[in-house]
Image (tube, rainbow, N blue to C red):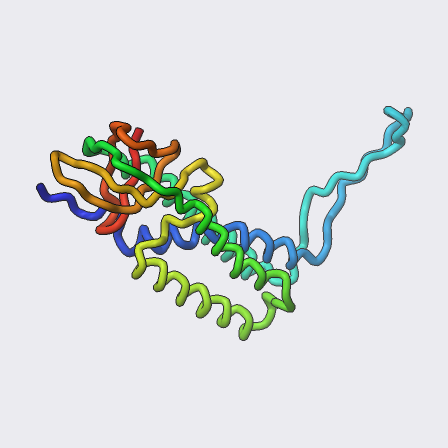
Length: 203
């Protein structure tokens, strides 16, 4: 039975980038130069307040870089949502033999986040290029090692990662499974192959 991989290179890169959207958000927040406030005064005090100040706009030091990070984040998250919605079509029935959680490996994503808390300046092309090179190497390693689905965004959506041994049509196999619920021995599940080493539980 021919079952091609459900993820291609472009999709894998988008999934990888989506995992670092919180990092991009931290960088955007650190680039804020000034907060523009809306001020409204009351004729009569309301709950002891005579006026309120509400932030309604932010001025950035490097607006072009901020916009690029925002667009990149939105595109990667949109593609991730599309992949998750369409990837589980035509699943295959399996019986779980045993499974071990690997969800703790998501913690490895916290290491690059430390970049945002050192002297990183979005106005310096050297810093931008260094970040691009660093994330490119991480992306290459993630794609090559079939680990792009070890992703904090997926973890936040409730997906867990499992080393799984299962029986499919009388054949015993092993792969890493992405699932929204615990995989227990003797459970019957439906899964879709993502690549040569990973699958996703569709129910």
